Length: 185
Image 1 (tube, rainbow, N blue to C red):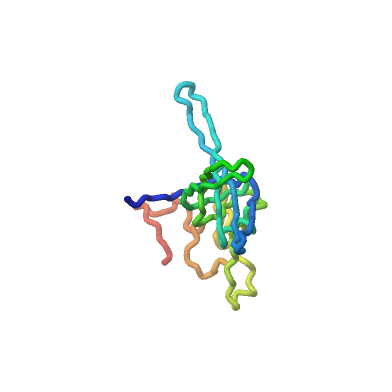
Image 2 (image 1 turned 90 degrees about the vertical axis):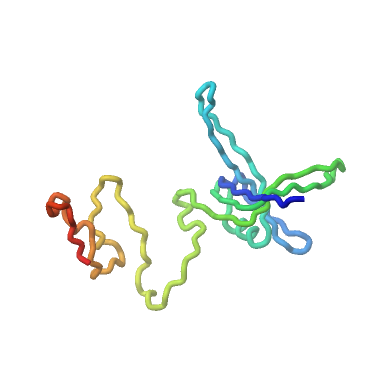
């Protein structure tokens, strides 16, 4: 029999909160459902149509712990894993049934861009001892396209001896005739 390839990558939102359980030998298992939407244009009518698939995912041990701690309904997530089809006997009817699910090998926590998700999935890096007295560096805010960029020297922790600030280069009409800019380094 030849060897096959079974790999799945899903990106979507959690359809419900994780269902966390423990096996009899104390292994943690999380069951999540990832809602994956898709859109297409109907060729006959030209109408935009959409459909959402709800994919069951199983995560074990460490990944189950991450699901338990960080994932909630509606959160975006990326799951890497493999498809598994398992057979079981229904306890009520005694009939054989099959379940198809994704067994997660990796789960990537993503941010939805909402304010309540700020810092979501980020693990703060340890700060060096000598930098403990400095305020934390904030991410720069970028102006809208076409807006005034201003000086980079106003940014927090900007080194004063840094030689280049684009706002100090001047207007392009002031450059030399051969369109060369004198870069100070």
